[in-house]
Image (cartoon, helix red, strand yellow):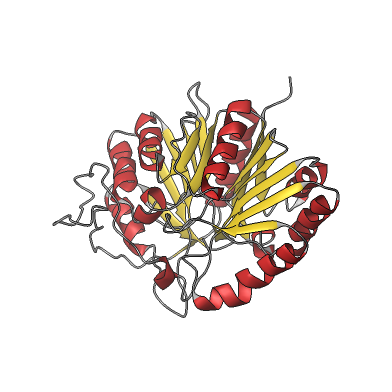
Length: 352
């Protein structure tokens, strides 16, 4: 029986799987996206529209700087709109619409960690999952419809991970349930709830490895230094690597055991990503996918790490009213998110 999930690895797999899915569409394509400008993807969307496929695009707008709107977002959206494609800015309800997901013909969905711009097909470590599981596809479609109409929805499918609804709870549970190993990629990290769960896992004997991005711009210090230091102080083997830009958000738990599973999604381990944004992720158990993820992670772990200057500034609890910083010696309970300015991050780097 054919697998209901297929793994996409970037930059290894390029655009092939996404283009094949778009070119096979016969009825509908619904896309929620943070950034979209890749010429080949845009051409495939326009081609689908020309053959009478109903294409709708819900795009992030509210969190972008004026410069980003003018130079990157508006030209692409104008081109698609002029081609007759329905495009709409995502609801301002969310701090950022950071989800990256397609629903095609109501029967296939693609959940991605990568954006649809050229750089993500050549210079970043990223992943995607194609699913044909009816319940997963239906819920991703339902959330798209709710966001398109700017109405509320409470997702319930166990294998899907949604911000701002359940990302903190589901990712914390995934980490807390690990018995042997956790291999993790993430671009950004500052959430004391999920990072505290990793520290707690390390303290109970789980081998926890974390690959983070070098998060810097204009000569500034690595913005992930505080999170990496927090993890290291708590016994997690955390590193930053730059052989590729680490944009992936992935957790591989207990590989090689009967309980092995992996999360792939748009969620960063940050307060704003988990509890303020619209984000989408998926948890899979397919053997072939877990094997490939483990192989990629093993290879990436062997790549040289970048020196990280320790930053012992305590993490700030996500609850805006919290009176005390968080120490890795006392992992915190999950708390509500503080408001973090995405625009301020974006002055030097619009990558999410």
